[in-house]
Length: 219
Image 1 (cartoon, one colour):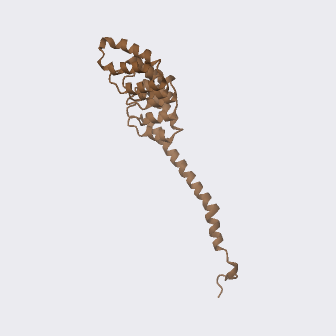
Image 2 (cartoon, rainbow, N blue to C red):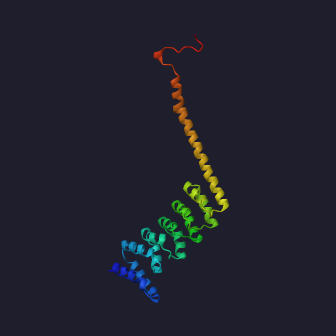
């Protein structure tokens, strides 16, 4: 019954007069708190694409379990800034990762997300051209880039990277390349010493079946 009532309200939301929408939102919110998990997942999926939605219910679902909240956090343009800022600081890493993929994110929200130091989310943010970072956000990201080559490259490729941050990221990428090259050279030298050189020396040894080698200069 609860599920049917929720679907009934959602189906009629777009036709509800403006002056009655707050009441409908409150009723839908009550129902959303009582329906089962699967029903909330379906409700969130439907609400994520709405251009007009019951905002209190939307905010409630955005803070629900990650699989309920993800469609809304990822796609809904109607989640208010205060909710996004709060969730960036308090929600789970799965919520943070979903938020990182939003079409656009303001500095106040990315500051909270970046401060969580969750590398998959930071890497997603770095590749998202709709994100904006404050000076503090850039500083945190550069620190995290020391633990992730992918993050380093994505940040360095951003057109909005501040010059000091960009220079540090390029230096970090160069240092990684040189370190990898040095390791490759060490590995190659080790293979030469352990395998190639002994094989060459073995090939120069005389074959006993052929008798003693002729001395150089002998006629």
